[in-house]
Image (cartoon, rainbow, N blue to C red; front, side, top):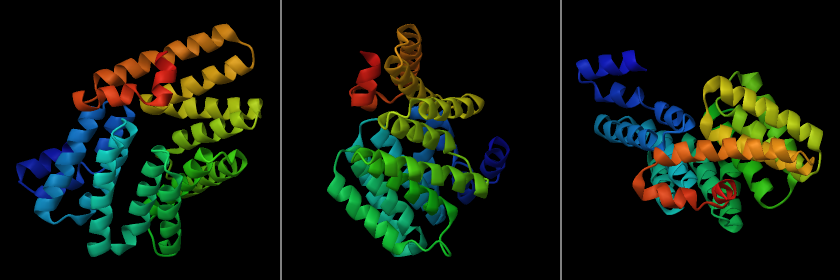
Length: 274
């Protein structure tokens, strides 16, 4: 990344300056630095617009929408996701399942199942596995899994998460497999399949630790704390809870001031901070 970006800047190539940042914002977000992630994504989009690199206005802008939504700024997230979808609609229609899936995910996070399902169904109608790229496949599968979790069909969510993990492994694209493992564990926990949940959380933690992903890490610690509480292991639960809280505090320190309060007021974050 640094070598490509340095060369692009030296030759004043805006297209490559945008392309070099395309996925880096997500990496910063995983590392628990939302402010740097947002800055990187916004720069990627700005340079992409100037250079005519359409993918930045779709992919990076949709990802930016998810980052804002994950920080409790879902209105800003929807603005970004709708802009990304509008660009896909007019300039690069093969990306529409991706942007629609992102819109579905944000509405699921907002607790709006009707809108979430509508966008999910649109994405499914447009999705052609023989045509579309892997990013759209995975985003759509994540949207399905999160939607089923949100509406309480934990058996369906666990099945979908398992299929997505297998798909990512088969494609040798495992960027978010730790997040999906965490989702699978949460579904298993809700189904009272505690041993299997523990195995899923352990695998999610192993991958998150290897990648330095503290954004998923705190959520796994919180879920493991709940699991240990269910098992009656209060000391272990308390320790895991404290580790999750320490990471949340670190993330909050690196969250833009405008989003810090909304992040700390998210229900799952409040549960960790209390």
